[in-house]
Image (cartoon, rainbow, N blue to C red; front, top):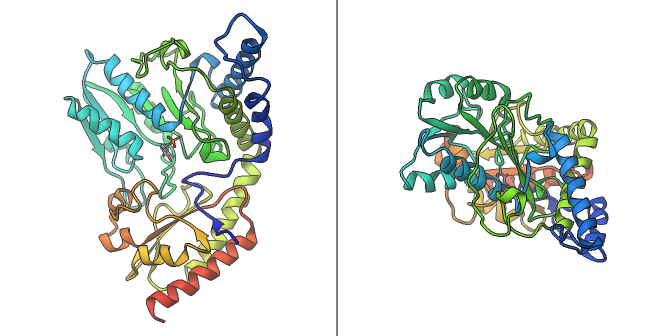
Length: 382
Ligand SMILES: *Cc1c(COP(=O)(O)O)cnc(C)c1O
């Protein structure tokens, strides 16, 4: 038996309906969407443009505002470095949050090394940003604010609309890393005042290696410097032959997620509540992140007096979960997110992140709770 998969913030299983939509573009319809002289190119281009329209519609955007990338990491890099370079003569100050994904923090650190100034806003003990802190941080030379929609470790959902409003009033661009949020909560670029939105397919049952960036074209028209130069695809903002199977798969995955959103998120939330109700009986356990304002499928807990890596390793044959964020696990660094919400080093190291997804069942949740109750009892020696 393979372990029960509860690591849906790291990646998700491809939905069979998504694979089915992708298949023709791996085989007969293999054309290059940039080939303008024959059927192979035309049908590939038609598929890509239909996908672009579907995705744009989900965010309340125009098709021409969607740029395909290899994922959210590349989209974040394009947004952050692309804006920083394009607005050089307007200012060199950028603002982000301490709990962002490394795909935001690292481009910021890179720019800081080039002479940009970066402000890292704190969050409260629940993981939420205080809009007043943002207001105080904005300066005349601020060009970009980057705040994620949903945190990949503790699932906390930032209140985006007020952030968008603050940025708009001050003429600062607002980038949002939506990698974990897309398909799980409604994301509307105009209602939320988002100027740039990064997304990826593989966090919501689509294929890996494909994502995109929404770039606002009106009110204001966002300028970007390309980060990949080449054949001029995607309005010369992101060169490279488009990848139709992945693009079609992403559109299918996002469409399915949005169609199923209300019922499916309610089901997933009830599974999370059931898991938490059972785990909460463990002495010394605590919940990380806001109890309500979080992704339906996210549960992040810490155990007082327990060695986190011993726990994860004792679970590995039965439950696939992560401790801290997948990207930094193995390096034995306490999570920067848990530190930012004020967790001690011990609690930050003794954390488990559960990510519940479309294919998890109630029986799996009960089994996982049972295994964890047993293992923690053994490790705590009672
Ligand atoms: C997964 C993730 C990313 C990286 O996305 P890729 O498509 O894997 O590059 C960026 N930001 C957040 C919040 C994520 O969860």
